[in-house]
Image 1 (cartoon, rainbow, N blue to C red):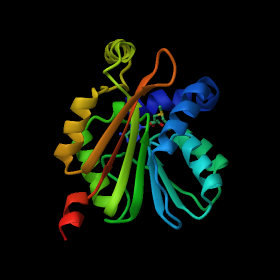
Image 2: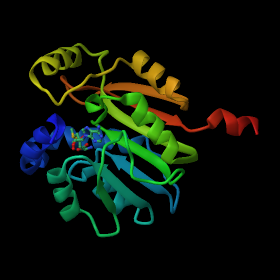
Image 3: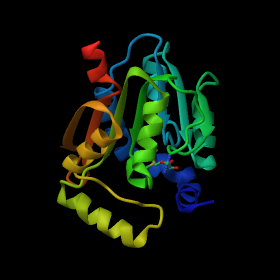
Image 4: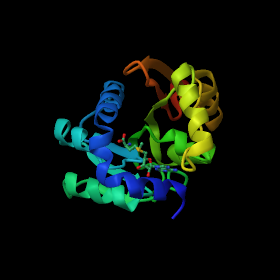
Length: 210
Ligand SMILES: C[S@@+](CC[C@H](N)C(=O)[O-])C[C@H]1O[C@@H](n2cnc3c(N)ncnc32)[C@H](O)[C@@H]1O
């Protein structure tokens, strides 16, 4: 088990209760920015206990859903919460167990600050997205002072944490991975949590020039 798995194995049983406000708020902000069309395939990377997938499953019953997470204890809870139609699998963002061009939409919610090889993860996203597929990423935003403090604290005291990003830095990261049509919204869900949601597209410019 690595540090992320140790951290979330410990937290899994209490995660939904302890983080209820935060998960509900970030999930709603993320959902607002996901565009679905009937019958599309969606992957939630770092799906944890399956909170986002559960809402999507209820709201859009004809969407084909999958979730991955490296922490078995989080996935066990997701498995109990979701219907058998949702495919969940133990995996890291950096190495996705799916064929090329499988998904229309890929979501990360409160996961990116753990990812140690972000460019490799984004290349994997691009690989498994269909042409013109969309990615939606919600995470803490280092443009807010409270998040900068939180990031510094966790870098010292929490071995699972990796780093948070400013909007400008995150834009550059997404752009250098090859994603197009990047937009990043910053917002606060309460006085403490300064967040951002990024949306981007695979091959948007190629499609326009076809
Ligand atoms: C804060 S929880 C978020 C869970 C869920 N997305 C939510 O919004 O409630 C972070 C999750 O990211 C997972 N995670 C951490 N590093 C990851 C990585 N490199 N690839 C995929 N998932 C990762 C953890 O196991 C954990 O379940």
